[in-house]
Amino acid sequence: MIGKWLWMLRSVLRRLWVRVGAFAVLAIATAASAPALAPTVPDGWTEILGSNAVDQVLGILASSMLAVTTFSLSIAVNAFTAAAGSATPRAIALLQEDHTTQTTLATFLGAFVYSIVAIIGLNAGYYSDGGRFVLFASTVIVVGFVVVALLRWIAYLPDFGRMQNTLNRVEEAARDALTTRLAAPFMGGHASDGSVPDGSHGILSQSTGYVQHVDMQELQDWAEDAGAQIWLAAFPGDFVHPATPLVHVLGDAPDDRAQTRIRDALTIERARTFDQDPRFGMIVFAEIASRAVSPGINDPGTAIAVIGRQLAVLAEWTGQDGPEVDFPRLHVAALDPAEMLDLAFRGIARDGRGMSEVQVHLIRALRALAACAPEVYGPAAEAFLQDIRDGADAADLSDWDRTRIAQAFG
Image (tube, rainbow, N blue to C red; front, side, top):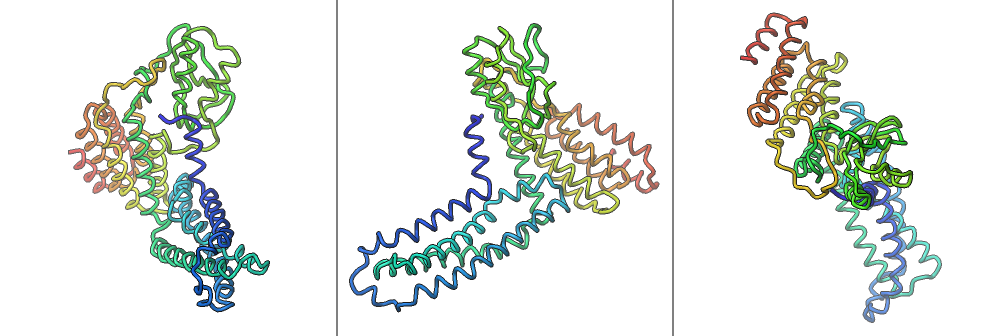
């Protein structure tokens, strides 16, 4: 489990402005370094270029890149809006962190900044003849980067923000989160059944929002210093408020300074993220499927596709290995398979109750999970299947739909 500051740094580096800003700084440095490289230009090479060759190219680059950057940014915003409308607003964050989109926009803006800085330098007499030659060579390289970025952007746009593309991103994020948690099912601590020991002290949250990250090393360090044991009560993805305990401490009652240190180990923000939260991916999938089977959309095919992807992700959980304890003073409860199935399929079962094709695929997915990982999903899947059977009996379905669902149950 990574520490809080490394996690925060990684989160910041995913943002669009960081990559765009980095490219802009690189562009300024490139334009400004031409005079320093001028002495390396062999004699006679400067005569190859016309006096206005660099000026003309830079003028074209500056005028075109501003328009291209603005247009590309509007395309990205439209893709975000389309994904929020067709899938779910919770998926927008995955599109905003897309590396291709960020690199493309950063390349276009970087080329614009480079050309503007170079034009200012030319008009100010900053460049010698050798510097103008270096500037021309670097401009050719920048144009090459822009052409490659344009071609890549054109090939990327037909799929960007579409339903299939959004589902791919949600599946990847959900699988990464679940795989990471399964690699350390108790987040590096001892296995806990969720009960709280008698005599422990609950440390309440002072913020309202979702737990995004838990710094296990920081909690372990404090527990070692205090000679205490900690039971984690709030996990990534949990909604907390000032009456919610974050942890339970067995030992001497922590003073105000210790409580502040413990609270700071848990990052609480307004929005929920996929990091460290395998449940969130299932919630986002369920939202997409529920929207698809709503009367206004009536798209059971998307709901069926979501069920297949949920099955592919959940099937990664085939067993629960014994805990590898990296934080011996921490106690953590494991994921609940029944909760995972509820988050993944409960909304689809409810909203798609009148669509036999959706119910059939849901039944098959639950049976597949029970067959692939009976120790993990067996009891929970059987209980869920019984709920679906009861719901089908109470639903207003045609005889043909009832027969189809009955055949799926076998």
